[in-house]
Each structure stands twice: as structure tokens, then as C-alpha cells.
Length: 265
Image (cartoon, rainbow, N blue to C red):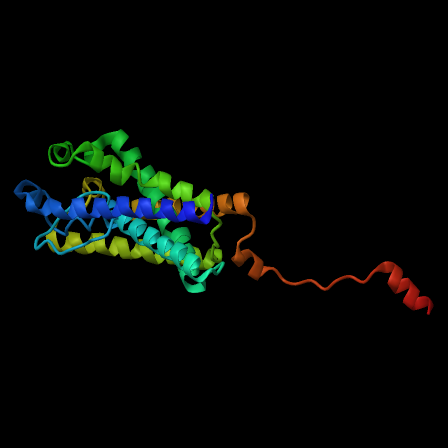
């Protein structure tokens, strides 16, 4: 795909996420929704945090799917900026922007979107009441559920194969992922301590030990997704810059014939 086509693709995906954020932000005007969106705002849901909070609603709101949207909107915004600056400056890379774009995609955008897609639909198919109650069908259109839980993954997968991404070292990448996971868990626990309500019904069914196990297994899954993304990137595009930086230069072995000639001399 040419640079111009890539820029158009990023702009279209960014526009889609901007629309979703706007649509969700307007949901606060409905009294029925405002009662459902209590205790922590729609931003307490991992998938909603993925779509970007655009304004204060004045009351608490909740809808699964936002965190994923926030990450994706920011990422595609940065990707569009990177495309535009490259065309304007006619440079192959805008170091800071390109590095931030790759770090955001490799450590957060791809792992989180894939994790939410897999975990949401696994729990939904097992028992939808654990993650997305039937009552929400009377509040939100079904297309919105798929917009924030299904359609979020394909663009990330396309992006992985659209261009090469420089992965950081495994230590740095997994550490950033762990910090993000701990921040989200802290948010979930804070909301529960303040309101007595869990952001997802599944948490209410778990004991403290069960919660710890659930969060630990979730991190292992998302870390595995991160490593899978790194492998796929390497398979498609070859070594990343991080791989190159960790390689130790080797001294060239002298030509055996030259060495023998020198010895004879």
C-alpha cells in the first residue's frame, strides 16, 4: 500500500473512532441511560476507555468498550499525524512521532484491542450476563456493541500487516503493559471502594483470591498477545530496531589466504 493510501486508511479509521466517541458521549442525555451509567462513568469499562472521553457528563456513565476506543483513537490520530508530516517534510521518518506511534501500537493498541475482543466474546458466549446484560440491548443499538467489541480488532490486525513496527525490548514492552494493567486494575478497585459496584458483573461473582487469579491470568493472556504481535511483526517484516540494537557487532575474520600469505612473507 502506498503512503498516500495508508494515510487515507488511517484517516478513515480515525474518523470512525471519533464518531463512536461522539455517539457515546451524547448518550448521557437520556435519563434511562444515565441510571445505567452510574458509579464511575462509561470510562470505567475497558472497552469504553479505548474510545476517548470527549467531555464531562456531570454524572457517572458506564458502557463496555471505551478503553479500547481511547487507545485506538489516539493511535490513529498519531498515525495520521505521522503520515502528514512525512508528506510535508518529505522525510522517511519523523523520529519522535514514528517512535511514539510504534510504542503506542506495539505495547497497548494491538494487545488491548485483541484482548478485549477475545475476552469479551469468550465470556459473552459463556454467559452474557457476566459482561453485557440483556438490559443493555434496550438502551444501546446492537451495532454499537459490535462497534466497540468486534470491529475494534480487525483494524489492529490490518495495521500489523500494513507496515513494519519497531518493537521495544521485551523487558520494556512487558513492563509498560504491566504498568497499564495495574493502572486499570487500580481504577476498577477504586470504583468499587467508592461505590460498592463492580464495573463488570463477573467480578462480583469472584472471591478476593478469585479476583487476583482472574487479573493475573488476564495479564498473562495480554502479555502473550504482545509476544504474538512481536512474532508476527518479525515474520512479516524481519528484525525490529530493538533486535538490531541488541546484536553485538562481530569482528570480521581475516581471509585465510591473506593470513597464510602474510605468514609466508
